[in-house]
Length: 232
Length: 244
Image (cartoon, rainbow over all chains, first blue to last red):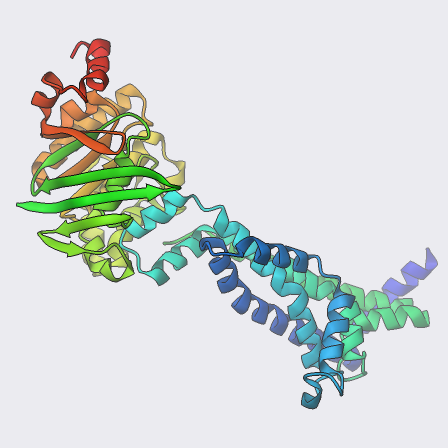
């Protein structure tokens, strides 16, 4: 029990003292995770809408791959991104391995299928009569999608929160493609793994508080947005 | 004047012919009822005529000119309004729901507000203006749905069984109010129903559709009183039931 209490006290001291390293790690984590989720949202929602609203040959196969992607183990994503960015790999000449860009790529790979899959599911559930009613009201193609996004707002924001949860919790791929380099690619999850392996539970607890606080704050904001009353 | 016409129209889905209509027309100012058993093709006919669905074969003419049901004819689609059986209101206020069609047409905000107030008053739902549309009763929601359609001042109003989900007293009151509104506005109306009582009360002319074909069309009273060989089995059942 002592280990927990000591750890918590040290953690609080560390956070309150404004430790530079902790601040850097937190900043890098936010930068990486928010960039990854932004890319996944911007790319994933339109793809999910296309997949949910349209019928085309091979749609079921595409959905199967998207759904498999939703459960893609992060270390597998890390492995493929590493191979892609390896010096002799297809994108090796870009020199991105062991950079935050590589971590962002890995996080996009694990969060993108979640956003595509859940958006597609939300759009597939829309009553076809609602689609007809929107068309009959004289909506253009863009207006139609805008109205449908508002109608599926709860599900779409839930998809973004699920994707965000995945990137914030992700450690295996970030460790593999980022290398946990101090002052560069070290993020909260990789740093926690390292501190625990060194027996520095107080630091790990401090980092876990910060990680949970970040997750809480971002999710809180998204939930407020999700539950806000609609205006058409 | 014929505002909408069909020529040799067929609509085929899953290798089944749902609609097979050599000639059909809707006159400007008419209040046309469409009746037929379930699966007769009434709603398909509505979708084809309102340019929401392209026919598999044949022509759809607007004021004598052939038009296609595709994304390019938005301007044409905006001349019509459709109200369906389910009110399908959005998760926002009654005011916003009724205003929606005009907002999509980028109308001036002051004009929109004036028109919304007018139509909510007309349908006796002005007091519900700020309520969330999803919290309304069936009758209230259908009044809002009809106001949302009529605010667009459509050249043709398409109605697909808008009263069928309502209980009898609610339905009777709404039909009465709606009839007065239609008389005031003289809107050309295409009214799909499977209820001969509604049809008899609201429409001037009637088309009976069975198995995707229009079997009889004419003055509502005459069609009901003098059904032909094809429509008699269907219409006489109604007459027996309600001794019309």
